[in-house]
Amino acid sequence: MRVWTVHVRPPAEGVPARATLLRDGFAPIALLAPPLWFLAHGLVAATAAYVALVAVICITLQPAAALALVLGVNLFIGFEARTLQGWWLSLRGWRTEAVVMGRDADAAFLQLAAWRPDLARAAD
Image 1 (cartoon, rainbow, N blue to C red):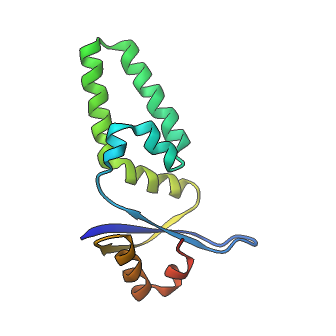
Image 2: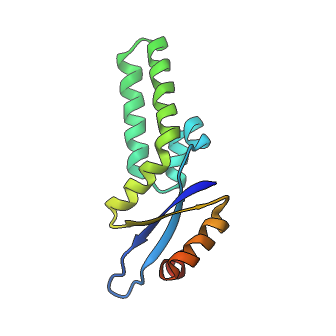
């Protein structure tokens, strides 16, 4: 079973509440190509931070050490990319409202609908 976190953007003037489910766990594409994964999920600031960090590492360290460190950073990002995505949502005013389990997104949504129908109606 996979774990999904439910993030909710509170309603604002003329804008209804919105919910989204983020799967927790390893993101293989984020390991292989962090900037592409970040951009695909709207994390522009994380993309800029990653590019700046890799540039600093490559400029300041010897090639072998730089390669090892960049691979380590990529491995870390692979494990924590979805956490960074949730953190980015929280910076934009979203709240983590629930945690559900399911073998896929549809099963997790059904769990959410059974437990919190109000959040399921707001989910995209």
